[in-house]
Length: 345
Image: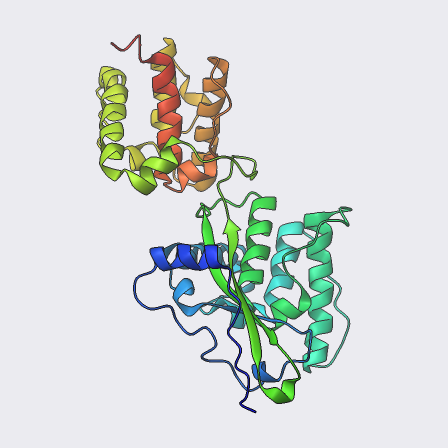
């Protein structure tokens, strides 16, 4: 009797979408499996990141942003995390130092051996502390990371954890939006002696579109412009530049780069004063800010001035403006333009 072959079951909708977005033939996601992977126990599942998905520009940007943030936080410990991220995070030591720094606590780790089991015991203590901080008493909420996932160097779980920590502590970084990773979940189909593997494929969402509080929000017109209509985006930028220069020219100032020149908050403050017809005292803000804190102070002051003028709370974080996120800057400027465009005619 000929040996039965098994064709992996794949989510057809996701596969079709991926085929449209990704040129060339789809990769064999079972290539590169080690002998250990092919000897999984029945019911056990191992997750693998598609190598092509890992090279996606948005994924690479997210990884680098998180690495830079961790290195900034742990600079005093002389800890430097490098690529690949998994090699530095899997045993929990870096995560322990990061949580201790962010939470200003001491995570008590039991003295255990440096065996694999000992590493997992340490990692469990660290993740228990992370879950306490991030999930609190919400026992119903299932974390997207676990000891097994982190210790097995599963990149997606590490990214979920770091993004959650960065948002919880309102890290002064710009986290890329709408980042997804293509993943295969591999498990034995029948008895492992048959050597057959079943894998299902899925698209894992790491980040979505967020509001200033880190809450998921619906896509808006600027998301559409950035993704699908760059030519129209340039028209919007030019119109906003004409609008701001109409007022800033009164102070002999001119904007030629919306992203860079509004980054420290000074032009936002001046523009708010000009639009409402008042002068903002110099002692209220930093006219030549040099540090992140000074720039954040300026942008937050501009947000307060906007709300004092009757505008809704800005749908952007001050950190995103300071970190040169053009989409966030345009959203704020468009909010001002919408309110004052009649008076600028």
